[in-house]
Figure 1 (cartoon, one colour):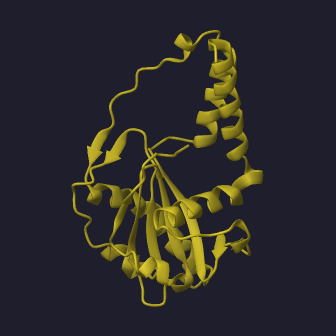
Figure 2: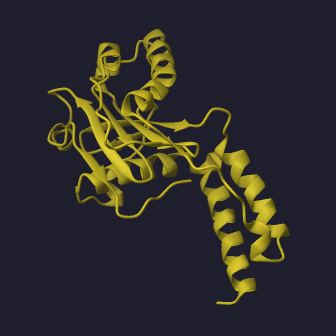
Length: 208
Protein backbone atom coordinates (compact mmCIF):
# COMPACT_ATOMS: atom_id res chain seq x y z
CA UNK A 1 0.00 0.00 0.00
CA UNK A 2 1.55 3.31 -1.07
CA UNK A 3 1.05 6.67 0.62
CA UNK A 4 -1.90 7.76 -1.54
CA UNK A 5 -3.70 4.47 -0.89
CA UNK A 6 -3.18 4.88 2.85
CA UNK A 7 -4.48 8.45 2.73
CA UNK A 8 -7.62 7.21 0.98
CA UNK A 9 -8.01 4.50 3.65
CA UNK A 10 -7.71 7.07 6.45
CA UNK A 11 -10.26 9.30 4.73
CA UNK A 12 -12.65 6.39 4.32
CA UNK A 13 -12.30 5.55 8.02
CA UNK A 14 -13.17 9.15 8.92
CA UNK A 15 -16.21 9.00 6.62
CA UNK A 16 -17.36 5.83 8.36
CA UNK A 17 -16.86 7.43 11.79
CA UNK A 18 -18.97 10.43 10.75
CA UNK A 19 -21.70 8.14 9.48
CA UNK A 20 -21.60 6.10 12.70
CA UNK A 21 -22.01 9.29 14.76
CA UNK A 22 -25.06 10.47 12.82
CA UNK A 23 -28.46 10.73 14.49
CA UNK A 24 -29.77 7.96 12.24
CA UNK A 25 -27.33 5.46 13.80
CA UNK A 26 -27.80 6.40 17.46
CA UNK A 27 -29.23 3.01 18.39
CA UNK A 28 -26.40 1.17 16.61
CA UNK A 29 -23.86 3.15 18.66
CA UNK A 30 -25.66 2.26 21.85
CA UNK A 31 -25.84 -1.41 20.84
CA UNK A 32 -22.13 -1.34 20.01
CA UNK A 33 -21.32 -0.14 23.54
CA UNK A 34 -23.42 -2.99 24.95
CA UNK A 35 -21.59 -5.46 22.73
CA UNK A 36 -18.24 -4.22 24.04
CA UNK A 37 -19.39 -4.92 27.58
CA UNK A 38 -20.64 -8.40 26.68
CA UNK A 39 -17.38 -9.19 24.89
CA UNK A 40 -15.43 -8.15 27.98
CA UNK A 41 -17.60 -10.40 30.14
CA UNK A 42 -17.05 -13.24 27.65
CA UNK A 43 -20.77 -13.62 27.05
CA UNK A 44 -21.66 -15.04 23.59
CA UNK A 45 -24.45 -13.14 21.87
CA UNK A 46 -26.16 -12.64 18.51
CA UNK A 47 -27.34 -9.43 16.89
CA UNK A 48 -30.92 -10.63 16.82
CA UNK A 49 -30.90 -10.78 20.63
CA UNK A 50 -30.76 -6.98 20.83
CA UNK A 51 -33.85 -4.85 20.65
CA UNK A 52 -35.00 -1.30 21.11
CA UNK A 53 -38.11 0.14 22.54
CA UNK A 54 -39.49 3.28 24.11
CA UNK A 55 -36.48 5.06 25.62
CA UNK A 56 -35.41 4.48 28.27
CA UNK A 57 -33.99 1.87 28.09
CA UNK A 58 -31.88 2.38 24.98
CA UNK A 59 -31.11 -1.28 24.28
CA UNK A 60 -32.86 -4.47 25.33
CA UNK A 61 -30.79 -7.64 25.65
CA UNK A 62 -32.32 -10.77 27.19
CA UNK A 63 -33.37 -9.60 30.66
CA UNK A 64 -31.12 -6.51 30.64
CA UNK A 65 -32.48 -3.00 30.13
CA UNK A 66 -29.39 -1.07 29.04
CA UNK A 67 -29.28 2.70 29.25
CA UNK A 68 -26.10 4.02 27.59
CA UNK A 69 -24.36 7.35 28.07
CA UNK A 70 -20.98 8.74 26.99
CA UNK A 71 -18.32 10.28 29.24
CA UNK A 72 -16.13 12.77 27.34
CA UNK A 73 -13.47 15.37 28.11
CA UNK A 74 -15.00 18.75 28.92
CA UNK A 75 -15.90 20.63 25.76
CA UNK A 76 -15.49 17.69 23.39
CA UNK A 77 -18.18 16.89 20.80
CA UNK A 78 -17.53 13.66 18.94
CA UNK A 79 -19.51 14.58 15.85
CA UNK A 80 -17.78 17.97 15.52
CA UNK A 81 -14.41 16.38 16.21
CA UNK A 82 -14.81 13.79 13.45
CA UNK A 83 -16.24 16.28 10.94
CA UNK A 84 -13.11 18.39 11.39
CA UNK A 85 -10.92 15.30 11.11
CA UNK A 86 -12.62 14.25 7.89
CA UNK A 87 -11.95 17.68 6.37
CA UNK A 88 -8.33 17.50 7.52
CA UNK A 89 -7.80 14.10 5.90
CA UNK A 90 -9.54 15.05 2.67
CA UNK A 91 -7.30 18.11 2.32
CA UNK A 92 -4.05 16.27 3.06
CA UNK A 93 -1.63 15.51 0.22
CA UNK A 94 0.82 13.54 2.35
CA UNK A 95 0.85 11.57 5.59
CA UNK A 96 3.20 14.11 7.12
CA UNK A 97 0.40 16.68 7.00
CA UNK A 98 -1.67 14.50 9.31
CA UNK A 99 0.97 14.17 12.01
CA UNK A 100 -0.02 15.92 15.23
CA UNK A 101 1.74 16.09 18.56
CA UNK A 102 -0.66 15.28 21.36
CA UNK A 103 0.07 15.88 25.02
CA UNK A 104 0.58 12.68 26.96
CA UNK A 105 -2.63 11.79 28.83
CA UNK A 106 -2.58 12.26 32.58
CA UNK A 107 -3.21 9.22 34.75
CA UNK A 108 -6.15 9.63 37.10
CA UNK A 109 -7.34 7.40 39.96
CA UNK A 110 -10.58 5.47 39.74
CA UNK A 111 -12.17 7.86 42.24
CA UNK A 112 -11.68 10.79 39.85
CA UNK A 113 -13.09 8.78 36.97
CA UNK A 114 -16.24 8.06 38.98
CA UNK A 115 -16.53 11.77 39.76
CA UNK A 116 -16.78 12.40 36.03
CA UNK A 117 -19.85 10.18 35.85
CA UNK A 118 -21.64 12.07 38.60
CA UNK A 119 -23.09 15.08 36.68
CA UNK A 120 -24.72 12.92 33.99
CA UNK A 121 -26.06 10.39 36.49
CA UNK A 122 -27.47 13.12 38.74
CA UNK A 123 -29.19 14.75 35.76
CA UNK A 124 -30.61 11.44 34.53
CA UNK A 125 -31.86 10.49 37.99
CA UNK A 126 -33.58 13.87 38.36
CA UNK A 127 -35.14 13.87 34.88
CA UNK A 128 -36.30 10.27 35.05
CA UNK A 129 -37.69 10.82 38.53
CA UNK A 130 -39.78 13.73 37.26
CA UNK A 131 -41.08 11.47 34.49
CA UNK A 132 -41.89 8.82 37.13
CA UNK A 133 -39.68 6.24 35.44
CA UNK A 134 -38.52 3.26 37.49
CA UNK A 135 -34.73 3.61 37.91
CA UNK A 136 -34.55 0.21 39.57
CA UNK A 137 -35.30 -1.43 36.22
CA UNK A 138 -32.41 0.19 34.31
CA UNK A 139 -28.89 -1.18 33.76
CA UNK A 140 -26.59 1.77 33.04
CA UNK A 141 -23.48 1.60 30.88
CA UNK A 142 -21.06 4.53 30.85
CA UNK A 143 -18.84 4.53 27.77
CA UNK A 144 -15.66 6.37 28.77
CA UNK A 145 -14.04 8.20 25.84
CA UNK A 146 -11.34 10.43 27.28
CA UNK A 147 -8.29 11.77 25.44
CA UNK A 148 -6.66 13.96 28.05
CA UNK A 149 -6.66 11.43 30.89
CA UNK A 150 -6.37 7.66 31.28
CA UNK A 151 -7.39 5.44 34.16
CA UNK A 152 -4.69 4.29 36.56
CA UNK A 153 -5.58 0.61 36.90
CA UNK A 154 -3.47 0.32 40.04
CA UNK A 155 -5.83 2.63 41.90
CA UNK A 156 -8.74 1.13 43.87
CA UNK A 157 -12.35 1.75 42.93
CA UNK A 158 -14.20 3.40 45.82
CA UNK A 159 -17.69 2.22 46.78
CA UNK A 160 -20.19 3.81 44.36
CA UNK A 161 -22.36 4.92 47.28
CA UNK A 162 -23.88 8.04 45.66
CA UNK A 163 -24.88 6.12 42.55
CA UNK A 164 -26.39 3.32 44.60
CA UNK A 165 -28.59 5.81 46.45
CA UNK A 166 -30.00 7.05 43.15
CA UNK A 167 -31.69 3.69 42.68
CA UNK A 168 -30.29 2.26 39.43
CA UNK A 169 -30.37 -1.54 39.07
CA UNK A 170 -26.76 -1.76 37.87
CA UNK A 171 -23.92 0.40 36.59
CA UNK A 172 -21.06 -0.68 34.33
CA UNK A 173 -18.08 1.11 32.79
CA UNK A 174 -16.78 0.47 29.28
CA UNK A 175 -13.67 2.18 27.95
CA UNK A 176 -11.48 1.69 24.88
CA UNK A 177 -9.27 -0.75 26.83
CA UNK A 178 -11.33 -1.92 29.82
CA UNK A 179 -14.71 -2.79 31.28
CA UNK A 180 -15.99 -3.12 34.84
CA UNK A 181 -19.32 -3.77 36.54
CA UNK A 182 -19.40 -1.19 39.35
CA UNK A 183 -22.51 -2.53 41.05
CA UNK A 184 -25.43 -4.83 40.34
CA UNK A 185 -28.40 -5.43 42.63
CA UNK A 186 -29.77 -8.93 43.31
CA UNK A 187 -32.45 -8.54 40.61
CA UNK A 188 -29.93 -7.46 37.95
CA UNK A 189 -29.05 -9.88 35.11
CA UNK A 190 -26.90 -12.81 36.24
CA UNK A 191 -24.05 -12.00 33.85
CA UNK A 192 -23.64 -8.60 35.53
CA UNK A 193 -23.88 -9.87 39.09
CA UNK A 194 -21.38 -12.67 38.42
CA UNK A 195 -18.79 -10.14 37.19
CA UNK A 196 -19.33 -7.55 39.89
CA UNK A 197 -16.17 -5.66 40.85
CA UNK A 198 -13.92 -7.30 38.25
CA UNK A 199 -11.91 -5.13 35.82
CA UNK A 200 -11.44 -6.69 32.40
CA UNK A 201 -8.72 -5.35 30.09
CA UNK A 202 -9.03 -5.58 26.32
CA UNK A 203 -6.11 -6.79 24.21
CA UNK A 204 -6.88 -4.11 21.61
CA UNK A 205 -8.35 -0.75 22.46
CA UNK A 206 -11.33 0.52 20.45
CA UNK A 207 -12.72 4.01 20.69
CA UNK A 208 -14.18 6.92 18.73
